[in-house]
Image 1 (cartoon, rainbow, N blue to C red):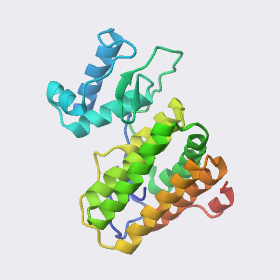
Image 2: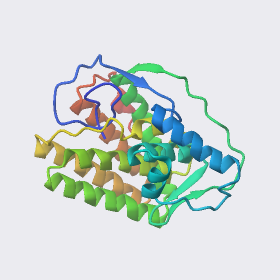
Image 3: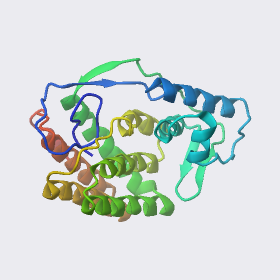
Length: 260
């Protein structure tokens, strides 16, 4: 996962110069767009009211999108927010289930936070490194299999020169790792940067560069599969640093000294 090519982006774009001073607008996890906010509120009401009790399996994304008359992209974003808030659990290969009520603390996001690309990468360096380490310690076999499938699909997207699919899978890979760590607060902190809403659709122009990007994801997956928390953290942190470099984000000197 790599530098934003334009504002409000976290996906890695095709290699192009990007101004380090570009500003990025963070939005609340629960209200990234009016459409997403609408469907999120409707889904929350189903859960809070008891219409969907704990253990209830949600309908497929296609069925829910038709039911609420929204795009599947908006629905996926709403479900990601529900998962970040601990209201649902996404189980690879099984579906989305309402969780048991517990002692959860709601997170209040400011309506708008202005920060630079450099600040974004520094935060990702710290948070995603920790998320990868936790994933190595706690990931389930099913979630690990799903992570492997995502990496394999990224290789297929590379060979098909499909930048849009590669970006989508990039988001999915990082979101899956955050979820695999089984820390809802950490997932919620990272969730705003795993949206497909601003996904790039431009063609791949440098296969060698994108191939390196896929290789880095394989290294992260291998470390998590080996249950090596330190190696997973280090692989993720190196990936974020390289992503920042590809996006021409000028990070503060000495950050590499913090590598796990």
